[in-house]
Length: 286
Image 1: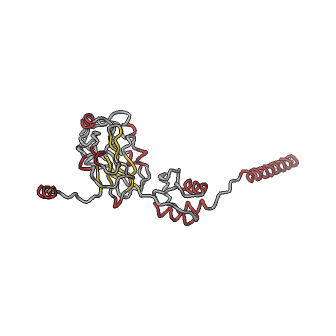
Image 2: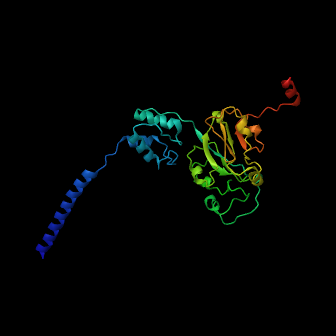
Image 3: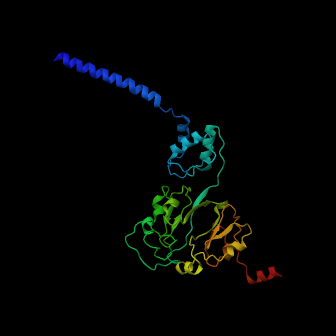
């Protein structure tokens, strides 16, 4: 009995030792040596893991930078140019400065401009409601007002306005793009913040012709083309009855804004326009 027990113990010890040796050699053959610079870059990042850089998280972003061996094409919205400059200094690389961006809401179909014609009960998300109906105001392109964008934002940079029923983007938006992905109607766009935070954009994505668009929303773009004609920088294009302002070409001259007959073009953070009196206008024409 004692001999049987001894043989069993010896066999188990021999089996364990053999397995340990095999596992050791397997581990040596397949081990992955991680570049220590990944941890250095990861520690320099904000740790928001927001996905705005296009990667799964900050560590994946750091790994991709080290693998690429360059900072070209890499940008951290949460940290901005300051973070990328710090990363560049740590790695002995050069980081190109990028223009800060912010989310803009390209819909002004508020409760006033697009009053409700029907009411839908039961839907608790825009993604769900998008497949059920056009919207309470009748516009199949406009904001559904169920706050998917708000829930997607981890920076508390967007909220729903109780009076208009539309989302409002706050100044602390870092342009991570989460709200853009969350909106099933594609009414949210990332645009350059602009000089002095001034921006001009068409606050409408409706591609219907003038009459149907205006029927559902009083401030819809009707595709008249007046803004295109007056723009001296060819920054405005017309496609499928909808005007679009290219922020990379727009010089913020504001000539297009008063030309829009439906006030679909928005100008943000500009000083008030000077009101020209009849006498001033007459004097200027002489």
